[in-house]
Length: 284
Image 1 (cartoon, one colour):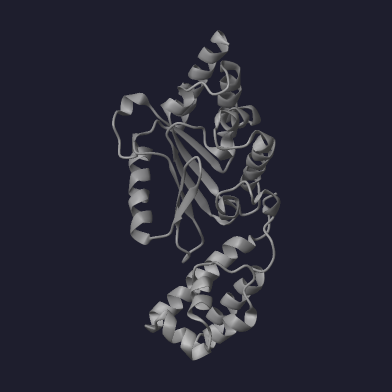
Image 2: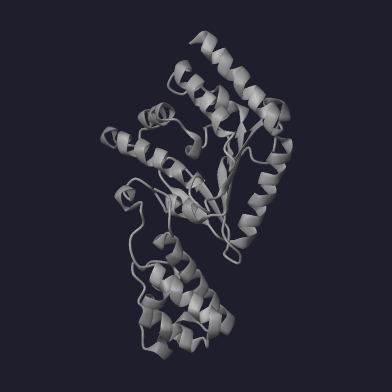
C-alpha cells in the first residue's frame, strides 16, 4: 500500500512551514488574522494542521503577507496541491490513534526502541492477533482489520524511497510468550528473515546490559527530508503521541544512541534470537 506521497504528511509539513514563517516575521496570530480579515481561529487551525483541504488562495494570501517568493513559494504551493486528497490509509483511519502509517510512508529513517513487544513493522499475523486479542481496548470485531492494517504497514519497507528501519529490541520482548510458544517460534524466525532485508537492522539489547536510559518505555524516532522536523512517536494502548519539539526529539536521539551502543551487534543479535527460537521450538 505504501507508495506516492501522503496528503496527511504534506498537510503537516505545510502547517509547520506556515507557522514558522509567521514566527520569523514576528507577527502574532491575531495580527495576521486581522490583516487578512480572517478569524484568529481559522489561522490557528491551519497552523495546527486541523484543516482537511488547504485552499490555494488562502496559502497564497499568507505567502503574500510573509513576502515569500521564488523557490520557497513554489515549494509551499506544491505542498498545498499535494495535501489535497485522502491517504491510502483512509479505510483504516478509525483504527489508528494518529497518522502513524502516513508518517512512516514519508520518513527517510525510523529508529525504534521496543521494551516489551516486537516492533509493529516486524510482527507476524499470529503474533499481532494475539496482541490485539489480549487487549481490553480493541473490540473483537476490529481484530482482523487491525491485523490486516499492521501487515499492510510493512509495505513501506519495500516502497521506492521507503525508510531505513533500525530497531533495538529488548531481550524481554523476545522471551515474553505472546500467543504460544509456536507463535513465538514463528515470530522470531520471521525476525531472522527480515534482518536480511536491505533496509532493516535488528539489534537486541540483552539482559546483561543491566539498567539503561530507555527503561521508561518504548518510542520511535521518525526522520524526514531536511529541513523537516523529526518526530518522536510514543504509543500506549489508547493513544499515540507525536512530538515535534526540537529539544524533546534531541533528547530521544541521545536515548536511542545510548541503547544502540549497549545492544549486541547484528550477528550476535541474530544468534541470540535463533537460540531463543530454538528453545521455544523444543518446548512447543
